[in-house]
Amino acid sequence: MADGPLIADDGSEGTGAPAPVASSSSPDLLAFACPRCRLTVEERLYGPCADCRAELRATVSGEQRAVDAPAYEPKLNVTPNAVALKE
Image 1 (spheres, rainbow, N blue to C red):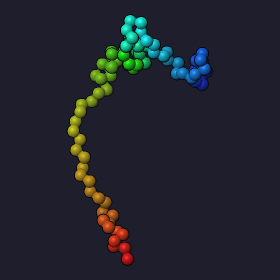
Image 2 (cartoon, rainbow, N blue to C red):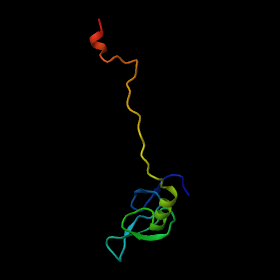
Image 3 (cartoon, rainbow, N blue to C red):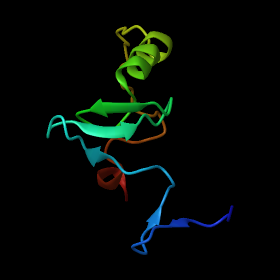
Image 4 (cartoon, rainbow, N blue to C red):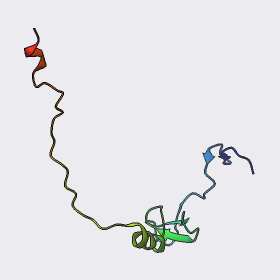
């Protein structure tokens, strides 16, 4: 296999993954291979299938928590009005 980009029959470059196509069962669903598990699925949008999304939510998601940012304090080496004090 070549190291360069894949060239389709129409001359365009591609990634090697098959392009999603409209499903014959419903015009709103696309039939494509899941980019994560490579199973053929029918979904409304391209991306991981429902099983992969559930697995990702279970393993990658974290708990939401409030983060307190420290109050802004200006640097001490900055004079508030250095131009007015210049002689």
